Image (cartoon, rainbow, N blue to C red; front, side, top):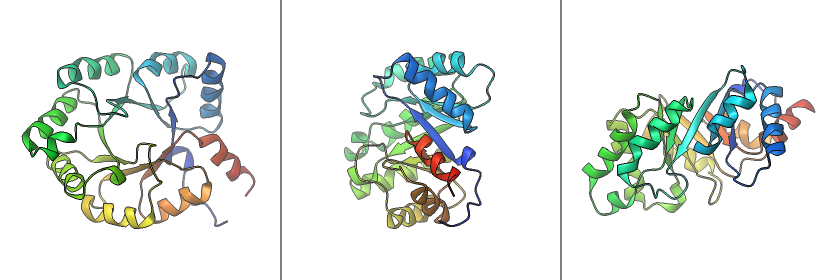
Length: 219
């Protein structure tokens, strides 16, 4: 295993979204986050208040998923839910837009939806699953997001095959290396994490963060 030159606690993001967690399991995850000094968490709206209570004074960025994973949120509810996330202490929004608008060539409607999310003033990450989108829709989604000033992208949503290094190279050609690129889905091993970082990815998100940090301890 190669030497690790990264601050893993900053660039491995803990994902806590399992709706079937017991309170004991939730608290155990919070203890692991503090144990490994993880600084970034992605979670559902329902868990925001619980994280604030369970982590107490522990400092971490907590991002809220909205319209995840089905992109089924009507636009009329965006402002209300984004403000809810902000009021509950979210530091950022991770959002899946309604891609069918791009398929219907309603580019302005797609852009207006993202602009609505941005009104909160919180950092916004746009979530895309390359394996599930037509190439034209995938490219248009990225290009419109960039035009709107989006700098944070998450590729992968936990449903589908893991990103390959070829996928990473293609994505970086579109987004440019100056933007913040997060990869999610099927990340369970330390080697996967290192390979992604070595190929230009900014961070990864995984619910298997504890297993990865246990690997670090035995190197």
